[in-house]
Image (cartoon, rainbow, N blue to C red):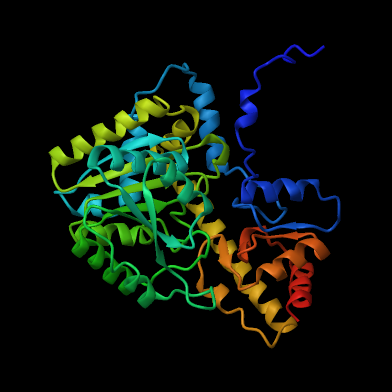
Length: 406
């Protein structure tokens, strides 16, 4: 006899939610018994052997933390003070050293996802912001995060008809109805999911429009160091500050530290005055208190240890450079191989995109055939994770793409 056979069964009134589009596909890949098989769907960096590596600098930091001991007491609501100082300086780039009147404060969060939710919730509650503009397309979870925070979603267009390149004129035109006090989400570098970034001059024009319309920019900065370098990747943020925008920056160390499981991120406020900065930081802290109270210790301690130790920081930056260069090299060999097998098609747009992701130009039907016929998994949009490619699967992948695109 079941213990709950006479239960009220009210939970059955909750509708069954379908699996997450990305994590669900990843689970499907794991269950696939075919060989070979390739996973280009999940958004994690993989090395040449298809593993998610742990950086040597991270290993050394963990060893140092273990040897130092320490308890497991609660962190402050804002997180580790040393972490917050170093993270703010990292995401703001050279502007913290060159500008004396930049008022900023960083609060530690559980990953970039946590930072985005904190930012959205705080804007709605503290500033009565009701609308956020996000790119079409964008990371699948953006809409869900901001909708859950109580914001209405509006879209600005991003790609041209080929779905592989930026349509900047259309982007600007689609913001015509944006109003003062509304928020706009901007991908600082390595746009997810397309890999398509504006040029520096286009960023300048877009930031000027944002300032003119008095929008509130939120920068999603999940891929610092994956574009050009740690400093250059913060260019849009520096342009926004120089234009006089008050901004929020949501960063993550999942990718550039490989700390996916540790959930390490931050939300940084940059304000036009010290009082404004302190007020907004206090409201962000209030939101944190009502959702999760305080952030986890371990991941933040790793980042703070690496950034605070000169030798470890040099090692980390070298490892990050190696990752960035490997992804760029993968794009080159991938396009070269595809060009030989599919001479009638042009995949050069993949070379212009940056970061782990690429809008490949493959149609949803072609993606479905790749999965059904070749056990190659990608998102229906044609987005692929370039870091899922390696020397052992490159030829098989390109031959499969050639077959489904004929």
